[in-house]
Amino acid sequence: MRSSREAGVETPATVPTVEVTAILGAGREAVILHKGERYRLRVTANDKLILTK
Image 1 (cartoon, one colour):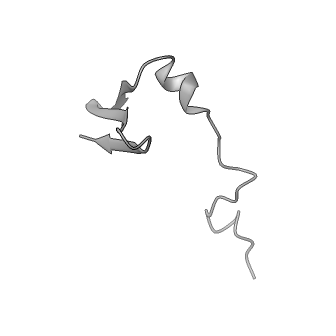
Image 2: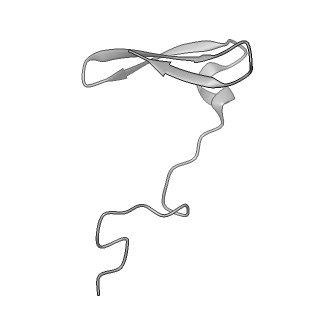
């Protein structure tokens, strides 16, 4: 039987973790580039995160 790591499944110990303030700083939104596409990460009025294209 293959382990989850061999099967390509990431476990909590292997998933990179980043504090949102490291991305947003003191602001409430940031643009993230992925394969030449721009995505907007922002904090909503209810203090939730939303990622839009």
